[in-house]
Image 1: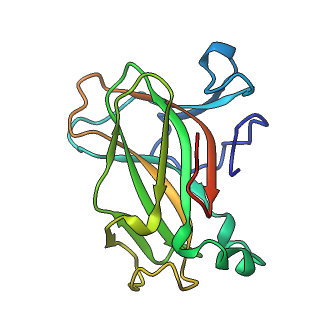
Image 2 (image 1 turned 90 degrees about the vertical axis):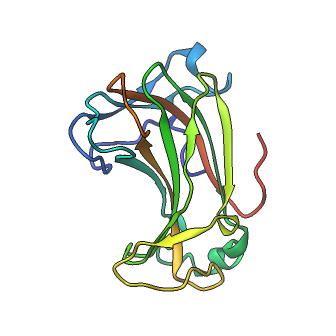
Length: 186
């Protein structure tokens, strides 16, 4: 488990595009993904620019496998690296999910060629096996994408605005972010 948000980790230093991107914790029981959950992450961007479609406003990272001493763990993941989480959208504009793989230190980056819209206002389970995606190389240091090497060890889902943003805000809830070396289940 990367984050179930029950312990409400500090979000002050989490990357965000601007000060209008807010992180908070929703502890209302009826808003949780499951009955055992105490809190979930609520993300809101309330000042979307209409002139830049697909703006990247924040991301949820799973850098665990890039930490020092994780080389042996990484060998059990590689081609079988899965990221899963629960998410629901709100009343605002469409949220786009964009998967990425980064090198330790983030100098090499590979962004998936497709994005997934979050349109459900009810909790939905998302999962991705990173080796199954097609990528573009975005890094300062270009390297071939290959999860069998040590280079790609940070995984994330980028949160982006949609093509059009008539409401001017996005809101979404997230819970139970997991990084596994097997296909996750609900």
